[in-house]
Image 1 (tube, one colour):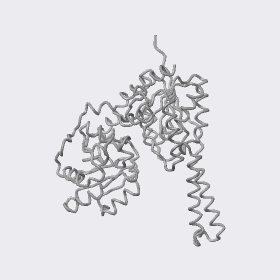
Image 2 (cartoon, helix red, strand yellow; image 1 turned 30 degrees about the vertical axis):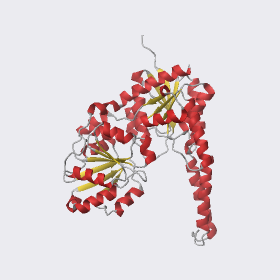
Image 3 (spheres, one colour; image 1 turned 120 degrees about the vertical axis):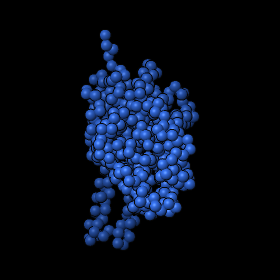
Length: 447
């Protein structure tokens, strides 16, 4: 006799076809759950436009239910008010020159301060709070239909754990709360206190808390005196079949005449450290390399990072691509790279968080140059023997590694290919097994 599947409600603000960093994790874990005894129903928001990757939905097994709800987008409302305000100001001035006498600039500063105050009060715990009434109402409707035994929420953003907390408080739902990133402290003393209390309340009410790194688990254990049994580490991962598809690609994306250093995904402000000055210094020492070396920024590079590169006179070396339309082409370009760049240089990022692309980098195979502090990315790169982790202010170390790659030689303890057996644990089906065990524990803890 077949054992019936238990049911889990997956509450995630981000889900395909939206193309954000979190959606790959949600698809990778969700699709593997039925084989592990859990039937998922996904609760998310309706389409909101932006960059999309509809093919991700094809990775899900047939029959997985996706419930999409309305969403009060507070940021969109704020933008409408701002446009109306400045439009009205221009009309009053008569010639569309609101700011000629300084009134426009003063109004703009006043509006900015008002917006900051609004965000610190209404946008709590963040700007996605407008999804909570919609998501909660649909979750309760599904509960009455018998559609879930356990609730699994993921964040950021933070509307999802608020829904989980309300279901736990009001209806005693077994709840697994996932924190993909640490809860970064906000500006302002009052807001900081309020968020610290909210963070503590959520963490202590959840039956199990899932995090990405050992460091984050230790911080929550120390800060909130949580039992280690309540904390589970489920890392990010990669789709093995996507890399199999890259083998079938015939046309190379990167030519063989250059040495290619490639960064994929978002470059957040402050994360590139001294990479571009180090590269500029190296090229001044080895001018013949300028015609041989190319740096590719694929995805969303911050304006600050591009300015850093241009200020160093690297316009002819650095190429900005934006997002590639197909994921298989992105992975193919990863595999063809001579060195993969990972800019994760802000201390608050690198201390406890790991960029999702790190796992694709590990599976792709080329050596990784990670600009980062001590933390999760450094641990992964070094344990996999997949490359080098360098402090963001260590320009000399970056130059040594760049030189080594250009000369085609190994450096230090890096071995390429790295430890394949270590990397294989990050396949989504294996990670989903840990998550399924966590659901079982949450059920037992709540009963």
